[in-house]
Image 1: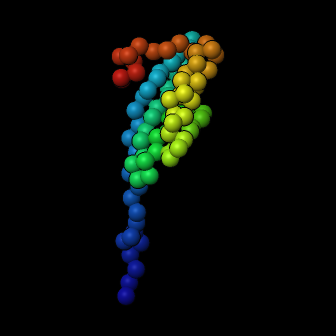
Image 2: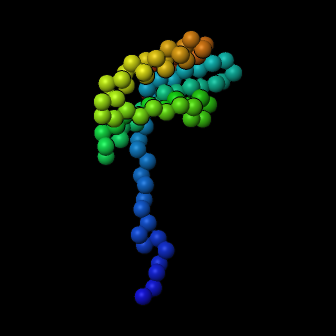
Image 3: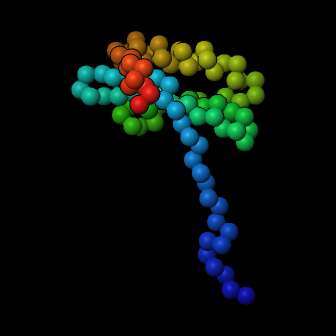
Length: 94
């Protein structure tokens, strides 16, 4: 019996993300808060990226889902207090 590498390889398909908020700062800096829904265990996650680098990520499932909206709003307020300017709806869409 022969063994072929990759016969049982598991393909991980990334979970799609959508941009919820986009912010800018002078000098061309961009911050984005993205969301993804993980369906295999019913979770929500938001991730904060600044200039394409992941800065923070929080996942909510079970009872923690109730805190999602308030903590997301808190993150938006922190960015705005730090001088980040919210983007327009067209910029967020795309």
